[in-house]
Image (tube, rainbow, N blue to C red; front, side, top):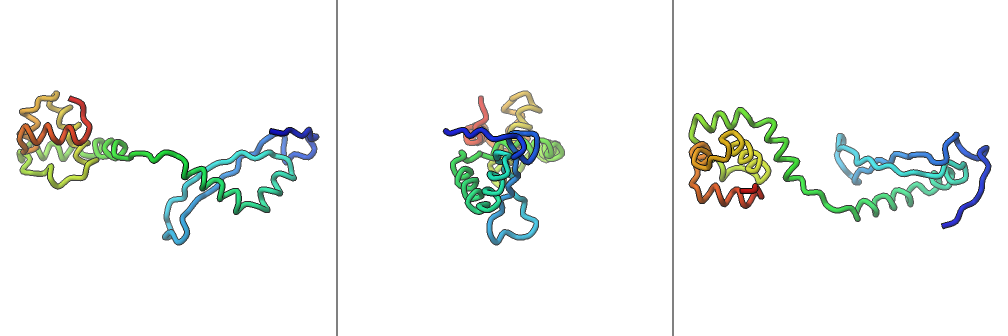
Length: 151
């Protein structure tokens, strides 16, 4: 790493670095697609800022390559939490209707949210949970394992 002493009058402001916002969007993405916002810090000297401006395509390419190295986030837990907050009326309806095979029709994140809510509501009483969901004890245990819900 090299360092070059520069006077402060060559900077774009009083700070040594500038934060630049980079908005990433896939080519051909439909209008209204949410941008993936990334930030990069850049030396605030005028020659560095000019270089970045002149070579923005290469800078964005570096940001995209860096993004590709990030680990993939598993969103099942996030989706399960979202469902859990908004599904309280469903649990009440299930309790009234005794389930009737609803578990087979749900996505993994929805299943997990529903299982967490039912187990919480009935203090992990598996008998009551089975009645509410309309499933057997074996099916409940299987679903709990598949969703990663601890015993």
